Length: 182
Image 1 (cartoon, rainbow, N blue to C red):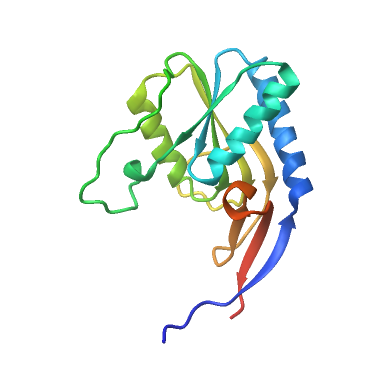
Image 2 (spheres, one colour; image 1 turned 135 degrees about the vertical axis):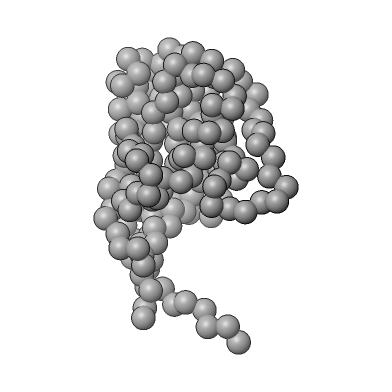
């Protein structure tokens, strides 16, 4: 029988904390963009897309606007996942040319997912600008990527994990820090 790792979980954010972080991220994005003109949110599948949807709803409520939120799947652009049938295509039903994009992720860690996202975006065209929003920044970058908007900085060790739970996927909103018991 395989020895499954045992983890100690600590809740770092509850539903209210996540709601406040999303409201704060929304306001910071509006301010940085000087409004909502040419603004498009791209949420990285899976939880990043739900965070992007919530930010979009929040911005639209605050600004009485129609900021779009779309999902982006970086799987085929990852350099750390071996896929012999790798297809470098991405399908987003919008034009990103000369748009201000905000890439949204749940947890920013090594930066490799963001690097793959940038490669995917540039395969679609040339946006006016790209900024990065992360609900959690846990550090430990392997590539020189820094978020423009952060819900919460959570310093971690390499042996810890940060897990974001979203109602749309997990039935609950919370962020947990997972530590190996050993």
